[in-house]
Image 1 (cartoon, rainbow, N blue to C red):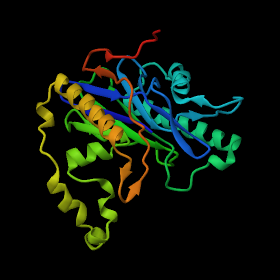
Image 2: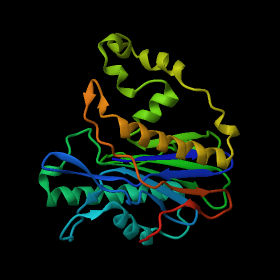
Image 3: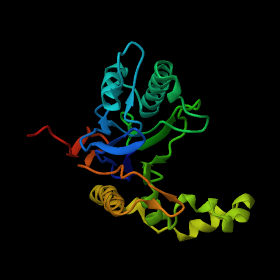
Length: 269
């Protein structure tokens, strides 16, 4: 798994993601790497992040390839001048196709309807607009992205992956709370979510500086890493894998400016 967080502010957009990659061998979850790449500069003004499966096997490939290499293959295919929505749609098409090819190679990997292999965030600026947009989509899904989840006129965070710790902190509850019998009546009546929303922290997202947004995204990932280090899931669902860890990559894009990397893993000895 993973945790990637984007924060859209009037000043610009932050994209952050950690580096852990896990795998299951003989039914045992293990940490395979702490150097996976999950944040990408798709163009000079558009960023992306991904969470979920670490590998897919495209048509013609003799083995599975990591997601970051597949995104690098995708980048040169982006037509010049493409806007954020166009790029998000192209990426959705690209990975839906690869997912289908993967399930042809490995039929027992096909997910039941409603389950998700990959999540993506795509965010940035259309030239010459000063309004940033963020789109999110899942793979596999029949629904291409159409409406932004965030804009710089509607600022705030967007997270994908193992976000239960972030949700508990910011929203005041774990999303699994609605499955508890004590809340079933309210959930079926459609009132549980509205009532629980009263527990959310109040944050003036429109007032955040870029540095504030960086601090928030990095802080939430660090807190998640720490909580996972000392826990093994929750009592109602024990055994959760510590899928968040390793270095945190952070990139920023601002109006009329190119992507800048605040922190980026480098090869080393």
